[in-house]
Image 1 (cartoon, rainbow, N blue to C red):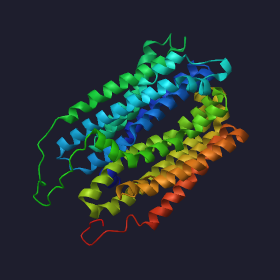
Image 2 (cartoon, rainbow, N blue to C red):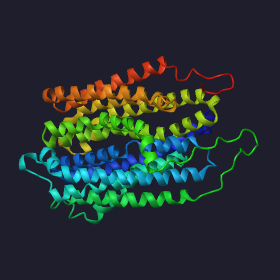
Image 3 (tube, one colour):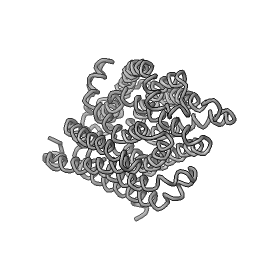
Image 4 (cartoon, helix red, strand yellow):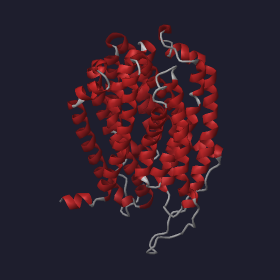
Length: 448
């Protein structure tokens, strides 16, 4: 039985993805441990909040291009390497243009951002020049994500997973190691974080470059059976942006669902409590790291099966769903049982985040249960329904944050996330069955 399980391609590839993701998780936790143990809690809160801003604005600036890239590249046949390479190159150009626009917006709004989120009553305020320089991280972080997305789309899953999570962490640890004595002085940790984004982006491009070599496309399978579906022409830069726009809300609202609570905690509470909440949130994201590892394996294969072998889609979908729920449930239980020891590792002062962490772990479990079902909305071109669900859940999240943070502090933010994720999973499952996204298969195994 063990041999049969380990020979299953889905389980085997998922196992390697989980190992890669766990490596990334360990490296990211090493970064956070250094931050929380080397910096005062107020300074740690500043840096963690800045990291949240950079990744968030970077995600907004992509406008769903990474979602489009994986959808189009993973759906194409592996022989169409020219199509895949050209799609990545045009995605590069589109993301580069959009990133520069958002960098300019960041620069214009830097004084307001500094006054609203990093003032701390004048106790520890980030230098305006450092905050403005951090904007360049938007562009280079986008390069990391785009390259990782492409690698996952062409089924280089392990490398893709490692490049997304391990590269930024390794780059930051590299600079921390070199400038260990200067790390805590004169807020050098801000510029070292920005430098790490630049290094990670450059290395990510080098890592992906070898997969962009053009190859001759073939028109049929090796056994001469069915002809391979010819891909559409690669759109221009404007065409990429236009085509990605319907997918943009999925990324934007999903991000806001995850991180709006941290931003609102920074708005309503001092940044030392932002540090408490950020640590609890980062620990709960371990579940999402495992989830993303499974996503990197499952989503490209679902897309490919839908286009190339639809008769196999049904069985693969339910195998994937069972795998996701089983892995995430096990990780959630382990994380909850070890929560006291994990929090103490960041410093004894962070144990106050225990109750918030418990709520966040449950919230991420709810969110994870909707993963494969959400994929089918994208695959079956029902994205508008998924967008509506995400908007509703986000509005509920923001309202609950506004109410509960004032009453319960960081526990209120965690409760808001739990309620919003509960609404999200119920709505996704309900619409999934109403729209019968898996039950429209004809006798030839084709989806209709």
